[in-house]
Length: 482
Ligand SMILES: *Cc1c(COP(=O)(O)O)cnc(C)c1O
Image 1 (tube, protein in one colour):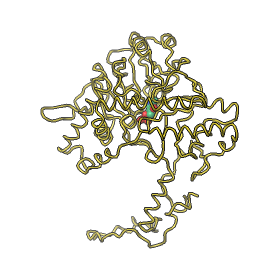
Image 2: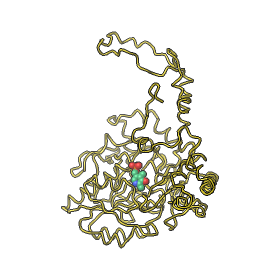
Image 3: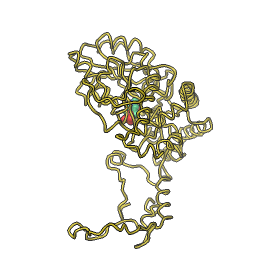
Image 4: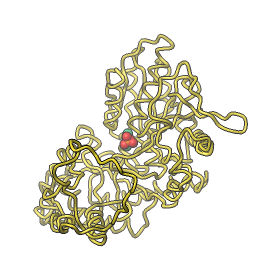
């Protein structure tokens, strides 16, 4: 089926969609030994065929621009197109970081820093990290530098059992031993378990709030006190910031270091490996360790300050993915403080609407009221009808919706998990369509489980070996190999 749709496979020798002028300057021919013996196997198609090829490819995919995309923890909201216009303006897209004209770009970074300071309650930010995961690595490296400077002997990072996999991976990469803290039946951090694990060896607690069950850590002030009293710091994984953007601030909850995923909360494009942006913010006591350079105001202008003695070093070329910072800046300016508050209100309202409509049909293992996302479990469907979360997810594709995140949080804390996050950018009609599909699927599970086992039915490819698809993706067209 795929083959039929790939128009590159058609074509004919000599067919072209462009002609190239004689460059005129190429007097010296390429020496014989460097010339290829056979011409490259390139598609030979007309312009119309070229267009159809790429449009056909794009239609085999799901995207936020075409379908509902309730991928929990990822905040797949609509990316306003005005961001693209800003980022693609020639004055921006063609700007070299060493150009004197980069003053405007430095100003955008500096002003965006003020926005994130206001939103997070931190004292300063770096925009160098290219993703949340890299932000975590920077954040935990900052915490390590902080402890090193104080000659604190620290070995352990505490992480709740519901955490995103990047949290323990980060702590381990930074040389720490990871210890899991239990969640309560409500889905929040078990404060007694945390207290029993707290010791002078603990460098930090990494926490997402709301956590990956979508539940607000309402004992956060007590949690912060326990960690701080024990000599540790608090790291905030900001992937779920959308839930309380403009309402409350991690800095006021006691967090010392945060990362914010601009490609989640601040609507810069997402997926396909990036580029992303995971700015890291810190309280004043950690400012000296930020990656060099930092953007500073200097007279009427702005400058990059490389002269930071205690900096953990440079993290990325120049100043991270500036295009993402600019997109986020446009978004923040368009919303303003009031718009940001509204964003989180509607994100939470939409999720709670879905929960109210889906609760009669699917089990929700952590029953506390969710914020912007919630975790359902297909355990009952699995036990009674042999239908699991993967089957339900695949069937949703047949109904025109991207599946939610599945099997996260991990099975030891939430078996057969389906983590659903609608975001604020979806209409009531869209939410109702999704609910209708989920209800239909719950009935199919009872009456015709095989239709779920065999799903998806109408896609260019059916069930993939997902590990191989992720690790060895085929991203290039090669003749005869589609
Ligand atoms: C997305 C996510 C991350 C990692 O962020 P990336 O930008 O994808 O690297 C970390 N923690 C949580 C809870 C997330 O949802």
